[in-house]
Amino acid sequence: MPGDLSRLLNALGLIVIDTVLALAFVDQLWFRDLPCPLCILQRAGFTAAGFGLALNLVFGPRSSHYGVIVLGAAAGAAVAARQILDHIVPGSGSYGNDIFGLHLYTLAFIAFSLMIVGSGLMLLDDRQFARTEPWSSRMNVLPLSAFVMFFVLAVGNVISTVLICGGGFCPETPAGYLILNDNLSLTMLSEAF
Amino acid sequence: MMSLPFLLFACGLGAAWLRQRGAAMGFWVAGLVVLLVLFRIHMGDVLNIAL
Image (tube, rainbow over all chains, first blue to last red):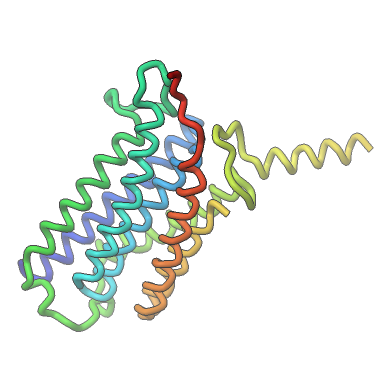
């Protein structure tokens, strides 16, 4: 596989992860489906796995970067599997909206599994590792926009998680934005006195 | 606390952009460790199973 094809595939993979993280925000903001703690950790798993793709774009493909993808996806898959097991018993309910009959944590598990398989397939070809110089000096529009969008989504998740959970741990079933509610309570308290 | 993995990954991406590969990998490892610790904490949540 030529290096440029590897770079293109990594950019496309990162765009797919960007899309997944962006859709999670759409679900949160548009459909008011607030993420549970395990849902937030699955988002972190996507970010951990996408980190390897971003490294491939900036520094060129290396086997260690694919290792980053596999380990990040494995961590995310473990979290998704735990949430699937939470609801696997009939009558134990589910969390959040479903798409085509599958809940987001099930789709996340499938996506993490595909990322691990995809990384394995990419690792089969050694020719992509022949180039040693960093590629960031000639990053074109597609990899650059994928990288920038990924960074923006990571920062967006920092802000979103702080708004939902505050500085501590998240409630198991979040009912609202904790920081805003706390501030609202403080405002009402101060108005009362 | 729950935002810490994202913060560390974002710092890692910033380090990667500045061509600091070692720092980027360090931030990624720290982020993954925090993610796993948080997962361990939430993994102990009670399962909704009636036996």
